[in-house]
Length: 262
Image (tube, rainbow, N blue to C red; front, side, top):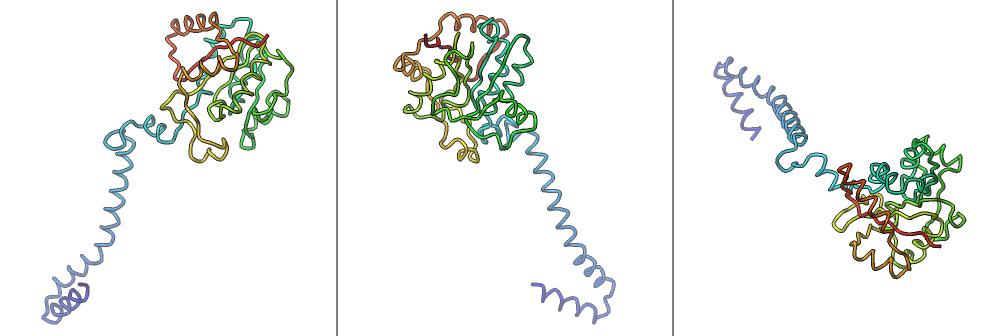
């Protein structure tokens, strides 16, 4: 096709139509720039369309979060701290949080007056920020495999809060781990766990957690608590629900309140 254009131009030049030939040359030189401009314009429009939250990109950040699995019960714990304080009162004076990103929960708990906070991360903290590494150096946050006995004495903490940790354990390990949490708690054990249909682990994190999250129903957990001789804390459940109602707080995770082992 390009060869025919060149020969046509030559015939026009030979016949003396220099003005038309010059215009044709000018058009051929400008066409690559025009194409590049159109490509850039198209890319800009696509980006603007994506951020507008319409069409196939509808749902904005929320839709993106669902695709990536950007969901966390540990974030839920942070927003639920005022509710937990109402439900447990003095039981919040010495708290252990267990779960990934425990540094964020511990940091927030330490801001609460009269509250000692400790953390146990089931996974490594190599990528943690400087503040978290400082908590690890001070011994406030520890890294330990929760499939084995916890490195604490019985009733070491008034309240134990667990999030984003149990969904990755099989029943074989849950049989050992849950009683351990109840063992080190003096006043209560609170578990934040995902609901069926929720997706938390990003594909890149599967190697860290070892397995995809298993979202279990409320009835499954209740049966499991009975099998492991753990009782639900009816008094704490009632206080938590009342405090949540007053603050218009609706958990996106399942929240279970259990009695400690005596």
